[in-house]
Amino acid sequence: MRSDNQFLENGDALPRILFAASEIQPLIKTGGLADVAGSLPIALHQLGVDVRLILPAYPAVIEKLVPLQALASLRIPGWGGQVRILQGSFKEDLPIYLVDIPGLFDRAGNPYVNAQGKDWKDNADRFAAFARVIVAIALKQTSIDWRPDLVHCNDWQTGLVPALLSQHSNRPASVFTIHNLSYQGVYNHDTFRRLRLPPEFWSHHGLEFYENFSFIKGGLAFADRITTVSPTYSREILTPEFGYGLEGLLNHRRPHLRGILNGIDDQFWNPASDPYLEANYSAADLAAKATNKQALQQTLGLTQDRDAMLLGHIGRTVPQKGCDLILDVLPRLIEKGDMQLALLGSGDPQLENALQEVAARHPQRIAVHIGYDEELAHRIEAGADAFLMPSRYEPCGLNQMYSLRYGTPPIVHRTGGLADTVTDASAENVMAETANGFVFEQPTADAMWEAIEHAHAIFRRPPVWWEKLARAGMGEDFSWQNSARAYLELYQQAIDEPLGNPLAKN
Ligand code: ADP
Image 1 (tube, rainbow, N blue to C red):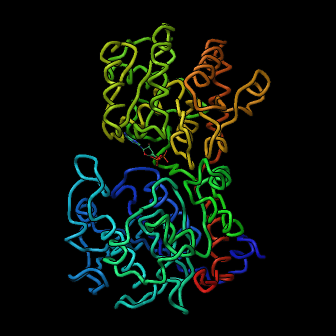
Image 2 (tube, rainbow, N blue to C red):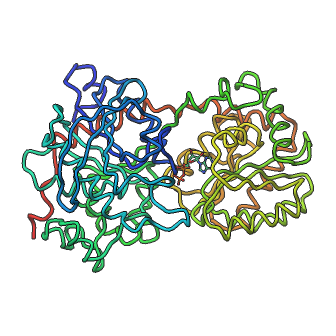
Image 3 (cartoon, rainbow, N blue to C red):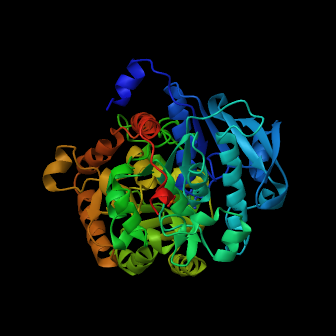
């Protein structure tokens, strides 16, 4: 098999890629999927690939991309009205197609949930329609004069695409990336009928899943290749603990499954040029980090204490991210006397309230900011001394990589992408600059506290210790270039050796 480097060096025609996602940073974002969808296509483009993006035309996206050009209109099964495809221009002039179906996508706020945090009732209709349009473009059934060699689908919202493509002999190849296996898009048989999906998909080998059907199975059973966003998570999802009932199918697809670690947008997340920071800094000159710490303490109303060990946390306030473990250790952290916490997140209202209550009682030590705030996220990464990431599972995780780049050693649970990016500190490896953070084995408050104590002990040693740890992380390369090359190699395999139709075996 040829490697991607040979492939680039031979000057072979690079594949044309349609990259489909339900959120793309900086247009609309709820999590890491958006970061990937906003960065990987750019890195592929920089390798010379003709890559185009496709996203639902949410109002916030239309607003950011005007002027838009109406390219095509079409009708799709399961939806009565007209569907329009608009074209805008993404970063580096990449074409982006917006699927404009006002009845389905013209609503403000979060792409998946209403103001009460409940799933939109018609999510199945919305993302089935999105998939139908992606397939129509992929098969060149619209007036758009372009056909991809491969469609790269992401998470359950695009899961039906590989399944629908499989019905066509002259189809482009497909890759399906799992960003988080626990979100599957599971619906009942009535919904299946209403969406007018091919009846043969209602099969164990197709979309059926314990008497319901799932969108994500469309990707897992039918895509030519499957990826997930870190090597460790690609192994974890083969087990019942992390497989959510899909481990059997994933084991069956194992020859086609690969873990490729996400990169980060190293322009947007660069302490040397980040416009959100009080003071920019680099590994060569860490002094200004203290200015960011002071500014963060001031902004959040924490005591202005240079010597306190300030821990940061950013993320969805949900059990997956281990926020309850953070809540559990707060009494110990307060008792310690020389520690502070800056937490930014939103999610589970009960957890949010519980965290806020503790913060209200100890405002000089604990700051809890509920909401989504990009600027504050950057300021926490720069201003904190260490970053807490006790995720129970973590497909890849981005914040630990941002932390490493910002010289803020992460304290993480050994799982998924956290295990692949963080090396636990010991007396020997800190000085050798081969450790970059702290790792604990079990997702429990006690294990996390032990790791925090370990970090605290190293923090209290002469500053050279902590600086070595910080510099080791700052020196690592988390850019997208390597990952983009790995995806390109995989695309070529998917094109060269497509999967047979899984339903044909019945
Ligand atoms: P996930 O996709 O599971 O939420 P990731 O770590 O892969 O977790 O990505 C989360 C992304 O969202 C990161 O870029 C993180 O900085 C950002 N993020 C999460 N919550 C917030 C918030 N409350 N404010 C600002 N950024 C946030």
